[in-house]
Length: 317
Image 1 (cartoon, helix red, strand yellow):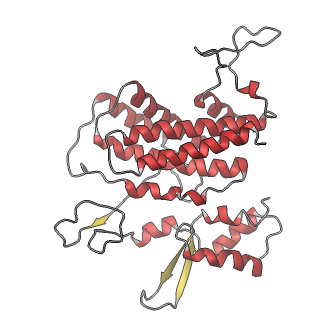
Image 2: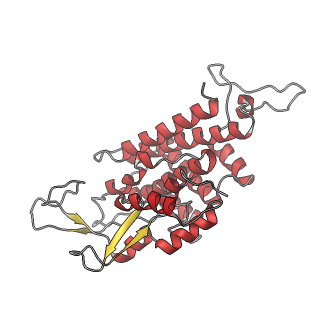
Image 3: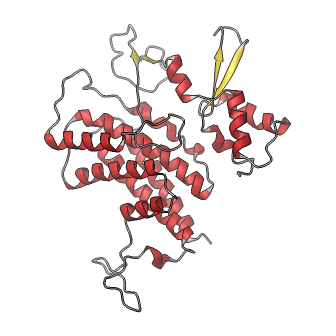
């Protein structure tokens, strides 16, 4: 029988999958807001799963106590009579204070909460904020994957969360858009949270800078962008610098990271048999050829996400 923590973890992953699915659908007026609400719901369930795991699975540890406290604790109840549980803000701050939640992940959640509050209690109307939602949302997903792995030793590569940024196309990027005072205040708030420089290879972030460059095809109907195999569709090409940001490690660096990460790690046949099949998966590796038309010489570069796969085969220190 599954524990409450496991049930909450499963629900949390399902909520994040739903959030990304909503965001990746064809454009509609409430996509950013819907993603924010669902993603925060996913995080709240994840934080509650972690909280229960750390408190011997005592569900009472999640209940909000009435004040002043008496000898026998009394708990607040909702309008329906159910026990009121601590929310995402309380749990995130407590776990951050205990050193169990990365400070950048906490700041990212604070930005998401600000977006959520605006979305549910009022609204924002500027398309220029959509890019900010993407930056915060990408970091939210990145942090979620890292936290699930760190707290529950579970990889989420099977869900292909990395697809999310491909859906972002701003139709208004060529127009001058003016933010109102409330929207300007939010942008300033986000900038204050993200004041520290973030290394792209870091596993946690406040916001992720996403840059897409499109090359127009000669077809007159090529302006609408879709993820497709249609040869007449516009191409999206990454520069060498952008590829290296996504795949920053060569073989030597990956091996060094493995030695630092795993107990008793050795460069042997087992290591090669695990690593080499991942070369064909763009989530983990990128092949760079000196001559694109010739298979040799070549060099393989790796994304930090490859550690999620290696974690399944080695014991972490």
